[in-house]
Amino acid sequence: MNNDLKRLALHVLTDRTLSLGRDMLTVAAAALDGGATVIQLRDKTASTRLLIEEAVALRALTRERGALLIVNDRIDVALAVDADGAHVGQDDMPAALARQLLGPERILGVSAGNLEEAAEAVIAGADYLGVGPIYATASKADAGQPQGTVLLSQLASRHALPLIAIGGINIANTREVIQAGATGIAVISAVVSAPDITAATHDLRQIVLAELYGHERGS
Amino acid sequence: MNNDLKRLALHVLTDRTLSLGRDMLTVAAAALDGGATVIQLRDKTASTRLLIEEAVALRALTRERGALLIVNDRIDVALAVDADGAHVGQDDMPAALARQLLGPERILGVSAGNLEEAAEAVIAGADYLGVGPIYATASKADAGQPQGTVLLSQLASRHALPLIAIGGINIANTREVIQAGATGIAVISAVVSAPDITAATHDLRQIVLAELYGHERGS
Image: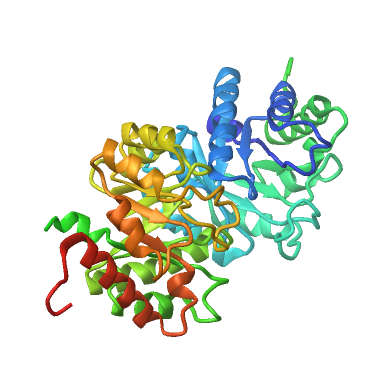
């Protein structure tokens, strides 16, 4: 079993507006209880000051739980709080610049919505690709056209790095994206909007790990 | 004549909405023609990708003209384009963290709206203070209560670092803020909204330098 892959199996992205009024730290803690392996701090509306405060709190929480903290877009915030890495989309800092600022050790995730973006991201030094949107999603206004699972299959045959499916991923389609070639999933509303965040996370995790590694004992 | 002080004498902040439809590079070039010593890239609505593009263009322009480029808020962007420094406000990254990421060589400017914020900024390693808002301003929605020139006088008697007056600074009150203790001014609308940006900048510069150093020959 590839431990690095496993650490990237289940990304939960924070979202201020979709969390049914629950605060970010409560949501993240519940997701970690359910077995999220990565918390990605994504907050496009916060001031940098607030973002730093959120990141500091999530850094302590994820460290305590042995999970990864990845900061969306903001390389400065990732560096300031000693996050494990950063994730950049196509509207964020170009991946090669992000890699340069992050250094070789931190994790760099890059969003790819087609084969060309994926190839560029790999050359720029991405550690994993966020592939999508796979399905239609209401969680990200700027997500672009759904690609379906075919993009995952194409990328899995071309690239060896972890492929994290994102965009409309939920309990009903997780098996399908892993079977298509994803090595993990990233979710927003499937977890943060769930009435029972811990249970929702746990159920997603079970499917991902079962598909990737066969059924786990005692997890 | 203190050359470092002189380099910080006249900051022009970019503003997308106040520039009467003229693009950022055109505005900056005209301001540099008029003798702006610092261009501060401030764009709170751009994506990081666009911000990087703007910063790259302003970096080339300011280097060519021998002026400084300072990036507002975004330490990551400042580092990515090799800007001369960054400016952080009270809603941005805490100054001590900003200093840590910028390293000892780059310029760190910090906004201070009262004596306490100023003292903290100095301890955190600020190279200059942005002091204000001195007067009422419509250019920054979050600028806070006008402080008048008294804050400048108080700070000038306590701190040796450059004090840059900001907030409602224009041709009519520049003399007064320099006489009160400012060593430079930062303007938005007084330059970027002027019909003749170069002339407006030149006139402000003449007043600042005349008050600081006596009338210059040939400038």
